[in-house]
Image (cartoon, rainbow, N blue to C red; front, side):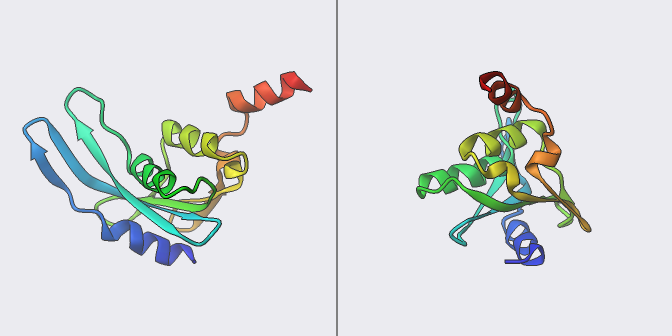
Length: 133
């Protein structure tokens, strides 16, 4: 699947709304493509006490629930459908789910795709691997 279609899938779930006086959801949508070709989507949830989560987390949870963990492509889009880079927490989460997820292609802007490895060039997991050598 190309990134244009992946962006469409992510944008299809964007639906900003107030859930309650303390919670909002849907201002960011994400889509993850796995090595089997399945696509999982999710939206962010923003909670007043800061225990919400990003759209990538929701998509990853759907993926893991379905029994998968290997991501080959991912994108998050805002209310306007513009791609945006994953936060550090999302980068860490996705790389922790499968040893090859650091090679996942991530659209961080309309004309820019990087691997998670490039977005996390020397994270704590790399340091741990180096210590074992």
